[in-house]
Length: 358
Image (cartoon, rainbow, N blue to C red; front, side, top):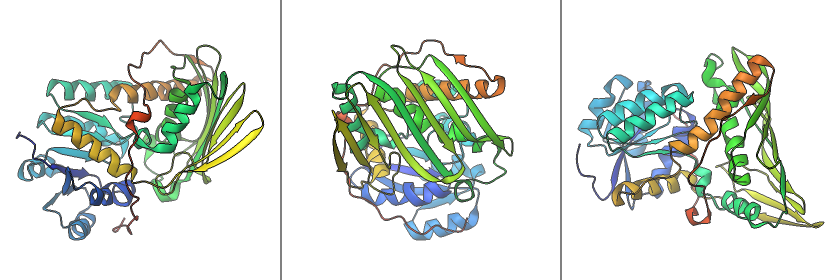
């Protein structure tokens, strides 16, 4: 299309809860290299309200996607639609040479994710997956503690992540409302990165509602002996925690996956415990600013599709295990880069706005 300006011009695609509560207000903290120019949504009332609130230049429906990107001289899109639409809008953006920052999970399947990755490569378009916790201090310091040997030999990971379906999802959303897909990726990503290896075996069981797994539990086995277990649910009181334990101690994060409040460490080594509270930061602003810097400086952004595929292959194995009632063996998978403390960034917190009509 055109050479990017000093400030990367963004269109946010989707106007649901995550777009309104987190993505769009984050641009108030990205003014050094990023500007929110347009919103694209299937809901004209939401579009009108958001244009007024954020003083946007353009808005349009999904059928007007290409027109809005062209008229707005858009450099990048932040895709915050339901997961079932991620592939469509990534391919449409890539075809125009527009860079893509896409919410997780990247796609409903590994095959879709690979197609998105290839389409972006073919057009020299940068693709980043919005694993916001890869830039968050408490999460990165947890990885540092796990890798330092302070906990001893790492053996167990457990996690619990749940939310109220009535707030986040439509009951008729079908496969897109899968707890394994929408919530499981958080737990899977945490376990993979904390252990620093890829799982080789998956077992899962689920309670289905409206044709999708509503409440799901899984057990992952990793080379060398570590085991991860987690429970995710769309219909349980809100819980967000994980714990990793080794031969000398354990580390618990609670909350562990949130963006609306600060995260907290509970570290116990040889019987001595310590609590560390981390300040709330603007996680979405941080990842947007980082992605813009990658565009401006022509760098390869992380987390990449490779990271997303590492999670999605486990989700697919969970679906197969739920269907068959048996454990599923995973083929070897190599991750070329793991997140480290060097990705840590500090941005002030944002105040969540009230939502436009839903």
